[in-house]
Image 1 (spheres, rainbow, N blue to C red):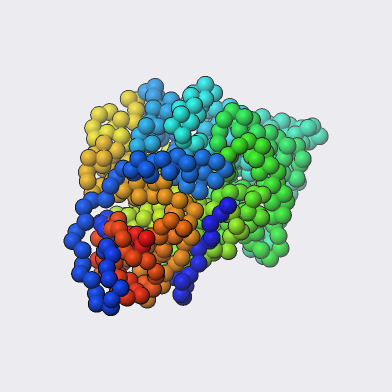
Image 2 (cartoon, rainbow, N blue to C red):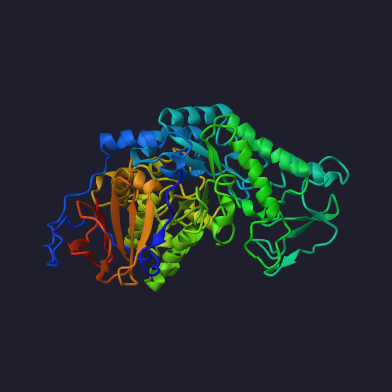
Length: 565
């Protein structure tokens, strides 16, 4: 049963942009009189560990079919996380060895970027065998060990399903290109001419080039590819492709994976709906219902959609119970730079107002950075305070948060390019202050570590009270075991200042006020919200009850998080 979706209390809110670097606490309760209450003394540092009671509540919330609403996901590029054998490439055994570190942070579920056999021309998103683990990452036994150890810690594991296309090295493509009449003749999209279908948006173009058609000299026909030429698109109008891909999903579920992140799933069918550039094709919806049918034959499984472009993911939820449980709200996460530059809450407002139209049961997946758009440091344009404000919203707003590995450190972009420019966001994880490759590998890393790894690493940041890592820990400790943050109502609050993004999370048990300053100047505002300020939680700002209103005073780049009941 889902909680109500976000709604405005007054006029539309504005975007998230600038939130301050210090965490602190909010003004505690005061009288209902109109006389302003005195400002509270500086609060002690917020706890970085949840209480035993919170942990017990979390265990209950993370059990059953709605577990994903309360989980914190962590996106991992296995290749860059931890190397166990000294070849310079992260692997499954290395990841398994770091599960305790992730649990210590507050992670409940892992999303593994593709681990299938691949020539790695697109960092694993060019799959050569859906049923085989890439040998550099390990074996089926290594994956089973990871799943077992994760499940022993009550953690879930998602795989990345890439069904829009395969690698040109996939046996299906090799068979298809050799025989126009064989069983694999129609597995891919072939044409005698390099002509693209069009709609109101114009002709299809490749994401990484000018034409989506490449001539295959063996078959003497053109094949269609939405991405690199080495990634031919599967033809989902072929019933065998539908059956084969559903079979892939079933086999991995049988092996114990807990769900899937589905890559560019909206691009499965090449014929667009006229006059609707960002539409999810009806045939895609039919396929997704079949995929959900496979998923639902296994208990407590879930999946999340990567919607294409930046359109609202509303269509990916279907009725709310027959397609995806989660979809990435990219117009919230990936457009952070627009909010930061405008110093206005408008963009973030629009995103959460869009989410308010989703069907009952739908859950937004909230991100800041990713393997595609860059690390949070880059999204925040190199300003740490912006990253801190962004993560406060990500972890406390309505939705399931997805943390990209290294984001909890404020990891900087790298400089070396091995595959393409996106490698800057895919650098190896720095674990230690010193030592060989900062604990990632005893061999030469496949990709150079990011700059400042001597100070931006797990060991150093755990020991530094004001670090980004500690900031994440404080927020995750606050969120832990509180149903209100995973499934409670969310109301956007207009405080009369376009540079302050504020909202209230509430359910039958508790309510919290969050206010974020999106600028480098002090800001104030007035929130007309019910409730008595009962607990100081996080932020350097002040919240003061004055009759029916709460007055907010936020320092430059500051924020405040306060409990209302």
